[in-house]
Amino acid sequence: MSKKFIVVIILLGILTTIFFYSKGSSSSFSFLNGKQNTQRSVNSDEIEITGDIVQESPSGLQSSPINAFRNFFGNRTGNTMPDYINPPYPTVIKNEALDVDERVYEKNSNFSLVVSDVTRYIYDISSYFLSNGGRIMSSSINTSDKYQSAYLYARVPVDNFDEANIKVKTNIKKVYSEYISSSDETAQQSTSKTELDRLQEEKYGKEEQLWTTYDDAVKQRLEQDIKKLENQIRLEQIRLKSIESKTSWASIKITVSNNEKYFKPYNPNETDLSAVFEESLNTVMNILLKGLVLVIQVAVFSLIWLPPLLIIKILFFRKKPNKGKK
View 1 (spheres, rainbow, N blue to C red):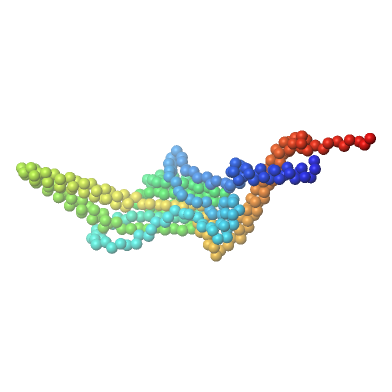
View 2 (cartoon, rainbow, N blue to C red; view 1 turned 90 degrees about the horizontal axis):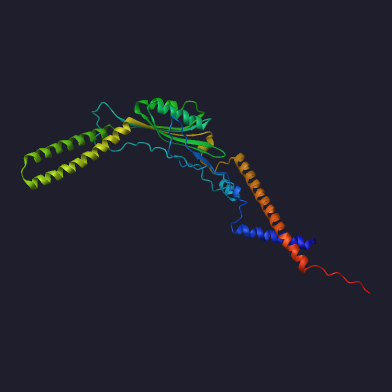
């Protein structure tokens, strides 16, 4: 085959590759789009952990060359972590129930911990909560190619709150952050009980009037008043039950990871040279791999074009034999 013929075949292979790639029918790059993060819930015979957590993978893990450079040089946003509990700043309360000796409190804690084995830690701490009368409200584990992280939200009896906070920090590598709060709910509970007693007393008075009156119009008005009072009593009972639930059960939220870098948001003023080098190397390898795929595609399409071009050359461009001179 002549050089011109080989060049034509290669050009046809390149054009065919560009055509199929532009139409989106090429699947050769599908395995280059990066690893997907796996997210799963932890379940066992004794532990039922449900729910999920919205947790983005640490940025800079995308395999796209453009995304890689953007992540490290000006477009990196860092990790998305669960919102912390807002500090219970005191509000203006007219009645603080200072005369009540038995106080009730809403207690919360939030931990960010570094552990060696994320899965094992979540299992152990969940077992502890359940064995001490607690409840697991939600839990999730997130695994990426660099970090493993988990989130757990539990409610424990308020009497076990201090002990549970100590247990949370047992068998860990480091406490990255810790937040514990306690808010006095005595005034709200006292006010709710007083209002509930007032509504019930008013209802009893209306019922007594209903039993002793014989005027139909008055009876109808009293019946309507009693229904309104019953609705108000029901709402106040719900409010009181909510307060009692908050003060009887403390909330504990835990975020854990096997790498401290998971908790550190990206700071553009700080450069992790090892991470930049690693990502740059991955980017170069990614580009080379995509280039190799393109070369293979061009070679395959060129081989596909070879038979029909040979047939065309034989049929239409074959040189006629020179007749010898007489």
